[in-house]
Image 1 (cartoon, rainbow, N blue to C red):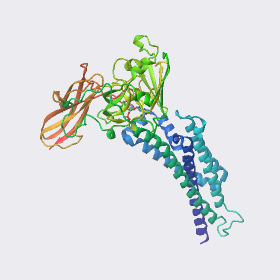
Image 2: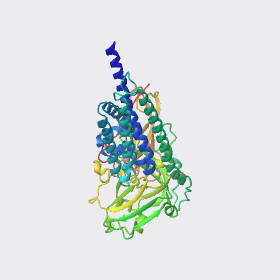
Image 3: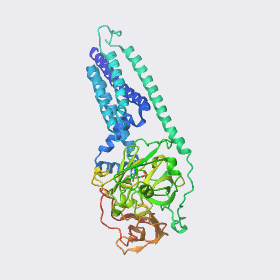
Image 4: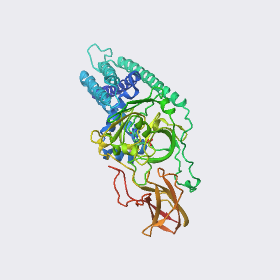
Length: 525
Ligand SMILES: Nc1nc2c(c(=O)[nH]1)N[C@H]1C(S)=C(S)[C@@H](COP(=O)(O)O)O[C@H]1N2
Ligand SMILES: [Mo]
């Protein structure tokens, strides 16, 4: 009877110790959230540690995460961080029951990790970025010390039977939970407020009519086939690839773009209004990601409005290397510290490289880079399409490697010719008879000249091509297939505007984009 009783007390104390750890962790995070509202929302520990984790993830793991979780990869990461923290908190709570000081010290050690991560983020504004983690950890450590104290047996404990202060614990724990919840709520609200200015600045934007409008998309560029990707991707469906755990919310009113560096005769600075006031170009451009697998979803098409980038560079006195310019690389930097490297030659060779302000008739959505992003037709996004851009530095490929290049991606990455079967879907069961096979093909800045379809091991047959809009856009195609019962493999390949046919050779996405033919297996009933 007596042993059972002791064990039950011990069990309760351990459970309450674990709870103390969780409460201390919760307090640390919510206090950090509150402090981050005074510093910078992005300086919070979860965002900072998550960002640091993303930057240190090996490409193979990153590739796997994108393949497995798709655009939910960041959610999975955040969940992982929270679960890890919770496990750590429980362990620390149990530790504090045995060694009060060591338990509290462990919380501080964890806080130090958050502090280090926050201070060393590329977009860090300095040591103040460490404050949220630091203050949060101190709050958590103190709380754990107090709670563990209530659980520690003492001779003069109010609860004579157990030897520890059960009532005191409950009071302290409840008060701590309430205070943490309040701190978290206030922090959240304040952090939300700073985003409101950005939202208001975006709502206030009226995009002027472009001085150089896009040619209307020919009616024949859009095929009427069920299941084909629409020619223009609606903004809400446009793929998203970036490293931002929290989407930067930039207030256009405070935004500045700086152009400087090697071979720049005049440093330039522009406000958002400066750019809006310039003659704008409007262009149809298809954007895609180097991480797109054969047949993958990371491609989209939009009509963009912006400023011709070559004009700005010329104003700054920049010459392309082919005309004696010193700099061969543009480093674009974003407000979240991302760097992308683009060949100066490509930007100044006459193509419609731009700083985009508008996407499909509206100011850039926040996820796609509001207020301004870069776009260079023909290059994968990671070497051209800097979102939330705030700085353009002219340099050389010898002198500087951008973010992805440091992570084993290629320095230069023109888009490879690719084609995708949108319909029928893999493992579809169409009925025998005429089945419309259709999809898209792309080779930005070279254009698509031909698309061919192969059924099983049969001969290649030309697909019907939709009209080409421009060489910078993808092209729809369709093929009326006389489907016979049984299992069949459909394969597509495209030929670009230079006459070169898409290679069959399968490569991985790393280092410069996947190649190979897209196939779909269907069973005809
Ligand atoms: N600031 C910033 N810009 C960025 C990135 C990023 O991670 N951060 N990712 C690039 C990559 S890899 C691609 S493919 C495109 C994707 O643009 P989207 O999300 O608007 O489709 O943005 C590019 N610009
Ligand atoms: Mo990308």
